[in-house]
Image (cartoon, rainbow over all chains, first blue to last red; front, side, top):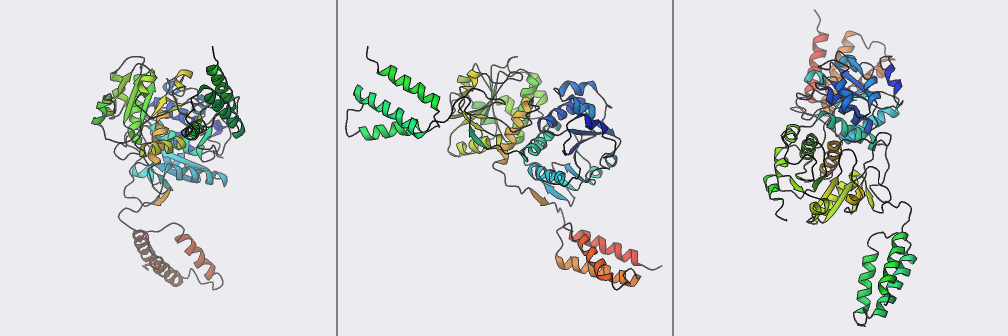
Amino acid sequence: MTGRDDGAMLVPVEPSPVVILVRPQLAENIGAVARAMANGGLYHLRLVAPRDGWPQERAWRTASGADRLLEAATVYPDVADAVADLHRVLATCPRPRHVVTPLLTARGAAAELRAIGERGLRAGVLFGPERAGLDRNDLAHADALVRYPLNPAFLSLNLAQAVMILAYEWWLAAEETAPRALMTHETRVATKAELENFLSHLVRELDASGFLRNPQKRPGMIRNLRHFFQRGEVTEQELRTLHGVVTELAKKP
Amino acid sequence: MTGRDDGAMLVPVEPSPVVILVRPQLAENIGAVARAMANGGLYHLRLVAPRDGWPQERAWRTASGADRLLEAATVYPDVADAVADLHRVLATCPRPRHVVTPLLTARGAAAELRAIGERGLRAGVLFGPERAGLDRNDLAHADALVRYPLNPAFLSLNLAQAVMILAYEWWLAAEETAPRALMTHETRVATKAELENFLSHLVRELDASGFLRNPQKRPGMIRNLRHFFQRGEVTEQELRTLHGVVTELAKKP
């Protein structure tokens, strides 16, 4: 948009928000931030007055391959300059005080960032320096603050972890994986008829062996076996194995 | 439960799941994991065959104060031993293959872990070594696998980041913060009557100054001003400031 982020053309073109590290101290953390951004599909990194200058080779060592993000990172002297071309700015802040600003959870922020992107607008999120966090002047640039729901008894959140949670929620906001599924590589869940066929086989062999000889207990025992075998979603392949087990065990010498 | 975790008495007694690091390589990562656990209210750490032995002073350096978790951590020779007293075991696994197991997202896993805890049962989550991840024998101990929804184009997830996402979802599963709120320290959102009172003041002064002298444009201009001033949730304190601004600007010399 401004020409400042020409480097961003090197990375996937996405309407993803800009991560802005304000006065970051450790280059290792900048690299770890880039890695976390890549994990969650965030591609635009800006640095405001990094303490030790930029670039720093140590950042590349912790980026674990997210090199393009670091190569495309742009440096600004202050927050005003870093947000000048953005339409919406959020600021992460574990303990906001004495400000009157909308306050979002990480999830609320991700939803807002997605909505902003869908309108074709460009958003950024400010993250403060490792120890002190953002100061009041930094926060005054933000349209809304982001506070993560986390253990209030232990608020010391690593910078890359803070970026990771936002990146994770950003990815999740457009993700539709069901919270629970069954992995069935190279096989499929058995039908009830296949399960019934196995249970008949089992009961036939148990009758033959005399295991179900007590006619009063027989129905309850069969019911218990049925309950057990249909508790998990048994697969067609597992049923074939179980058929083999029953056949083998029932073999008379 | 078994006596193995007597150290856990040093930390808050919570029905929180056990984080089990399987063959972790770097002590720094173990410390960073402890910090992430504390962020999300997870307190029980177990280590299976840590590569460099245990304890390792370097872990304490990256734990950022989560020392009690490290002090209470217990060490096991293998996975079977580490999960022996647990009722349910989940395993994180970025790319599960050739297994037939329920598959959960991080959020699905957190819900399941909460549900297990509410039944008074004890759960654990396995995290693999930094490079290789959990192997097939490790995975065979799991009742369900956890795969995070994250960018499939960049799956290199740092160990502490993997624990952070689970810890965050664990905390969130019992958290009821609204995704959006308004911070109003030491003040409150203005009532519509207070806003109306200010708008009257403003219009009165604008009439006096001649700014609204065109009778055809006047209603639309007032409407635009009203729209602007009620867009954000203006606070009672801000309205007092705005009254002062209008009074001051309207002062004739």
